[in-house]
Image 1 (cartoon, rainbow, N blue to C red):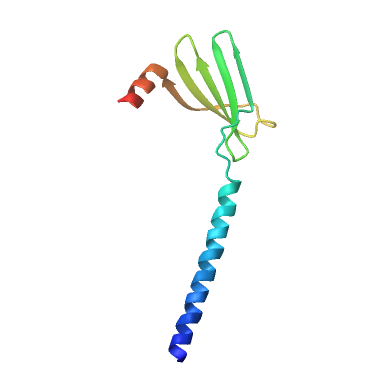
Image 2: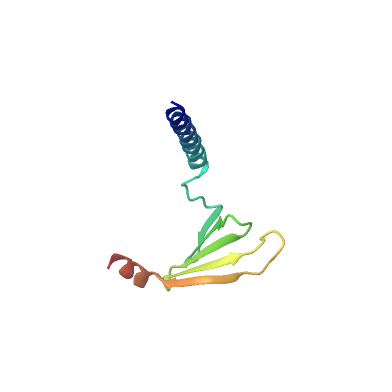
Length: 102
């Protein structure tokens, strides 16, 4: 009888743990935002500029040059206190879209 009782207690503990973990997963999943939020966007003179936070205190600046079809990404570390930018990446858009489609 004690072995069966121990198994019952173990099963109850496992089910309780599973329910707690499932509840935590649902709570954490609801906190995650799937939206891409642009802080500021501007288009003028053949350029489109878009900033977005990177989640670590810095911001990313996306620049699209419509004349050369280039997308350039810059990192703005601590944008309120620092005026420097670091280029992260640059792509030729027609080539990037061609690669993505093939």
